Image (cartoon, rainbow, N blue to C red; front, side, top):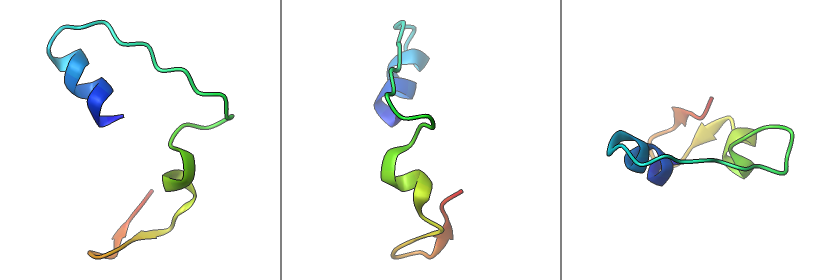
Length: 41
């Protein structure tokens, strides 16, 4: 996702394709992120 955003910010057309019903993979299923304990949502 970050790579796609970086490319898009440089003016390169980017298409993201996801086979799951939501984007983000496992990261979207987490509540907190180690080591900062930031909210993942």
